[in-house]
Amino acid sequence: MSELYRSHNMNAGPGALPLEVLQQAQTELLDFKGTGMSVMEMSHRSKEFDEVIQTAEADLRELIGIPSNYKILFLQGGASLQFAMVPMNLRPVGASADYVVTGTWSKTAVKESKKLGTVRLAANTENEGFKTLPTSLDLDPKAAYLHFTSNETIHGVEFFNEPTPPDGVPLFCDASSDFISHPVDITKYALMYAGAQKNAGPAGVTVVILRDDMLERVPANMPVMLDYKIQAESGSMHNTPPCFSIYMIGLVFKWAKKVGGLSAIEKMNRAKSDLLYKAIDESGGFYTGHAKPEARSLMNIPFRLPSEELEELCAKEAKKAGIIGLKGHRSVGGMRASLYNAVTIDSVNMLVNFLKEFQRKNG
Ligand SMILES: *Cc1c(COP(=O)(O)O)cnc(C)c1O
Image (cartoon, rainbow, N blue to C red; front, side, top):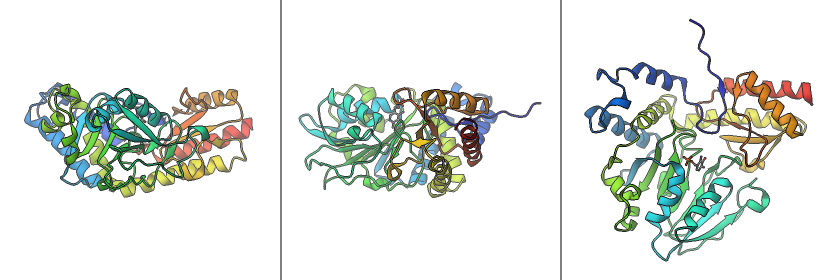
């Protein structure tokens, strides 16, 4: 048999998954724990699947340290649906919500929220090209909530300390692209959501962590699938949940525990991103990072070359070398390397060596 080929996967999402996780899924694909079937083929009401979803929830609670007064939901519709579900459920009629805008994703969250009610911008860094974090916030003490995006996947800016809302204003976070990439004090948050497919699993499931008291805000007569209360009361099983994606994200949570939990994972992520930022900074201006140093993401690293022609050539040659996904988002161009949890330090070393060699040949 030929040796297994695995690319150096720097895709922004869906992104790399740990090899061990994929191998376990492969082993269990045809016969999950003696059932003679795949998790894809079994009833979501079976005791086997119940164990899958309960274990995923318990492992996530342990990993992040989520107290019992928080619900964990496994929903569909991606983070994009949360852009609407959050205000529909948690912004009372007539109330206003504060949003911190630091990139494309928070801007998109605002756009959706505005269709449904009142939005105020607590900060907006667009005039500075979404390269940095806001230095101050203009906060409404009566806001229904304060929403921010912990990591901007396209612009590569990441919060390492969450904004502090005024007393009594709950903090909400779109953590899609840095979920389980570092420790977080969840008790500072009333709601956190993340589409799995960036850093935590396959597409198809979105994790929502929600403090119990928020459920009191849910209006009556919501469409059932959009109702946090119904989703919470039914254990995310009002209808058929994304069973296989929940199984996969559960395997990723187990893996994350096994490699030492979120502190150990953050350490690895820092080591990986340090390597790439150092290479960018030491390139004498051949490579330039998008984000200002103090706001640099550990997860998504957008950077430019001296010309678009060189960027195209760089992505093409990287691909030939097995380094995949370096082409930047179509909205900003350039390059982007996504160094999610499952991207190994070996892959990052490969990338750094490739970039040095590319500069030597083309610089
Ligand atoms: C990708 C992404 C989204 C949108 O996610 P979907 O699951 O595709 O809806 C929202 N927010 C952030 C930060 C993202 O990275």
